[in-house]
Length: 51
Length: 321
Image (tube, rainbow over all chains, first blue to last red; front, side):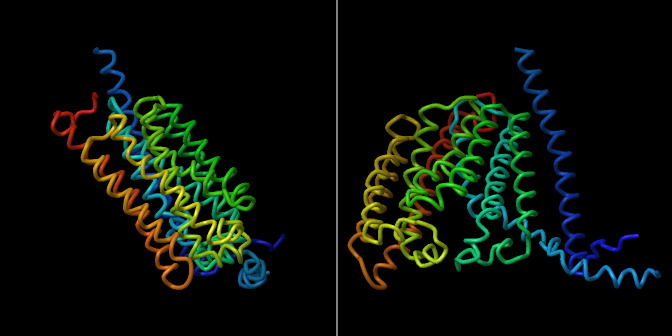
């Protein structure tokens, strides 16, 4: 079995954790954004239908 | 082999990998937040000045996408320019030249944001805004960073187009078109860019020379640069007045733009007159700092006038146009 895996130092692990949290926050924000954009576009389209 | 032994044997491989050390702050720095703030502000003015209306959520999304697209351009610029950034004192501490983020990481980060922002503005707002944003990123990264910056002293004159496009994208996001008014906003930033960066280059020319970047003071000398600054300042002052002339702005803006343009020209004349010594450097620094204030003030006045007009017409809190 090959042993060429990369092992992270404690500092790298700590930074990876903060980056992971930041990515999670961004993904959650994107979910909210996509939802808000969908609702906004639907409301604009409905106004168009309603005249 | 026990787990402990296996861990020890892989430590050598780990030492060979220099990635994964960037903090969240380093990735934020890749976005060039100070440049991004100017992009956000000018794009916001484009959105607010544009006739018609855009749903606030969609307007906010457009602004976010323009900001992220600008950040992506910054990250890709830092990926490509790491070799010259390493040489210049102003840029040596950036995440890539300092070794905190690898070139591959910066490239992947920049490309992800570039594709994501263009896709998002295309889906949420309109295809013209998406096309303009994609063109802006392409122009800044490929035309300016990869080609012009290292090959001609006119690099920032042509490359300045990328920095001038955000209000046009903002305008296109609302109207779905490019009109004379948005071109005027483009021209103000386009004409402002050369004297702004040449003033900086005058007191940072040693940096550019060491990095081999053919900025005007390095290639043609300080005096030629001063002549260029003066000519562009004389052209910029009337361009700054144009919004009033075409009815995009009112008389308050017109009077302020005239006064600010006069100060800009006066400072450019000062740079032109003082050719040597600490007074010459001081004059260049003063013009550089004032140029930032000048652009901010012009766009802030455009924004303020428009908001006041909307408030009086009762349309400030509506988006139907």
